[in-house]
Image (cartoon, rainbow, N blue to C red; front, side, top):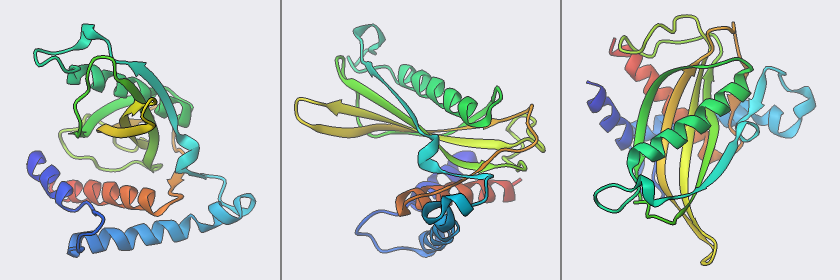
Length: 213
């Protein structure tokens, strides 16, 4: 069931140059609503709700040189190494954002878009993609999280080539954490249309999954 849900989620992603289907139109509409809500925070931050924050303000990043010790049988960097590094950064971002030790709930989705070779410069970028300050339903298979503030972190792994002045995405990871020692957290809002679409897609996925339980 979860695999089918992820397949449906991938089909709902908006791609430049492609016509939008019904699900994508709904996401685009939600994205526009999120951007409109973020308007005060973008244009008049001193008057905005103090319990809101822009997505850009939640970003963290680090960099690593891919070492031969973590290569697999195909001479590529082992996916588990990339996942561990992504998790460590996601945990740190959730900790810095929430102000309390987060509890890892799930790795919701992973995409492997480009292989990583030994010697590649890897830049990991994490940001809070969405929060549920009053908690929410993530499904029966996720450990107890009732009533806890929830934080969804997106981590992008980039392969940077400074000598060529180029960079490409290697992986996307989506981690969900709870804040068991907090009663609430700040609400994150997008600052760009791309961010709004990503947030709207994740909100839609959470709602659809909750409806299946």
